[in-house]
Length: 114
Image 1 (cartoon, rainbow, N blue to C red):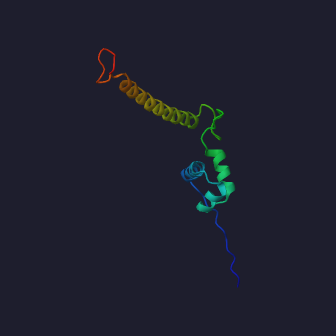
Image 2 (cartoon, rainbow, N blue to C red):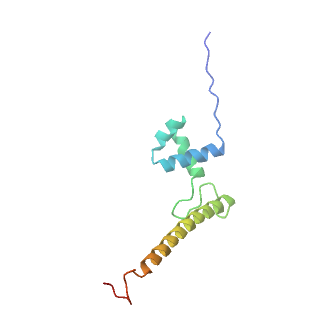
């Protein structure tokens, strides 16, 4: 008697797919390497990227998300919050630098230094 192996189709939840794509894009590794680490076919990562990747710099909406959809708006909001945090940090650093540079030297008398 010969036994035939029946392959069951694996199903992945949306969270796993999104995290796999984020891991791939953030790592700088090729899709093949990440797919092998996850036990997947690289074509799956490409398909998931097209479906779940964040919006490209060209202003396109995320694949699968219509402009104005909650997913698109949430990704824009997240990007804007990140940018705002970065700009606030730069502003605070510049304020501190300006305060340090504008303090008079302890040796200065009427603007003259010795």
